[in-house]
Amino acid sequence: MTGTLNQQNTPGAQVWSVSRDALELCYRGYALLNDTESALKEANPQTRLVNGRPTIVVENTKEFAAATEAAWKRMAPLIDGKVKQLRGCMTLLAERVATALEDPKRKSPEGLSHASEVRAYVKALPEEKRTAFIFQAISEGDRATVASVLHAQPFLSGLTADAQALIRQQAAAKFAPQDHAQHQAAATALEYVMEAGTKVGVRYGALSRSMRLSPAEKAAEKLKMLAGG
Image 1 (cartoon, rainbow, N blue to C red):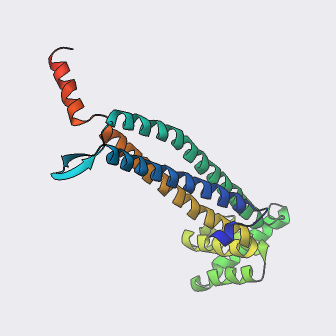
Image 2 (image 1 turned 90 degrees about the vertical axis):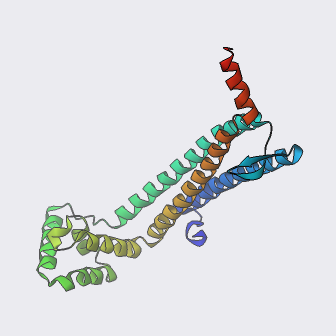
C-alpha cells in the first residue's frame, strides 16, 4: 500500500499523509492513556476485587475521568477530520477513474447509436462469451465498446450486475491504473483509520465511565442522598 499511495503529485500522496497522521494520532492517544493509568497505579496502588479477582486500580478517579474525557473531546474531532479528508480523496479518485472510463463521443447521436449496437451485439452472444468479448475490448483499449456496456443497465447487454462490476474493475485497471490502485488502497487506509479510531474511542469511553466515581465516593454520595443532602 505504501508504494501505491506514496507517489508525488497524486491524490494518493495525500491519502498516505493523512492516514499516517490519523493512525499516529490514535496510537499516541491510546499509549498516553495507558501510560497515565500505569503511572497513577504506581504512584498510589490500591487493590480491589474486580469481577472476583484482586486487581490494582487507580485512585484519583474523578480527576482521571475528567482528564480522559477532555483528551477524547480534543482527539475525536481530529480523527473525524482525517476521516473526512480520506473520503474526499476517495471521491476525487473515483471521479478520475470514471472520467478515464468515459468515451467522449458516447452522448453524441453517433455515439448513442454505436452504444446501442454494441449492447445488442453483446446480448446476442452466448452467455459464456459475453464477458470474454468485453475483456477482449478492454485488452485492445477499445474504450467506446467498454463504455457502451458500463454506462447502461447490465441487463441491456445480457449481463448480471456482478459481471458488469467485474468488467468495471478490469476496465479501471486498464484505463486508469494508478488512480484505480490508489482508490483501492485509500479504501483500505480508511478502514485502518476507522478501526483504530473506534478502538481508541472505546478504550477512552470505557475507562472514563469506570473511573467517574470510586466505590467510596459512590457510597458517600448515597449516604448524602439518604441524609437528604
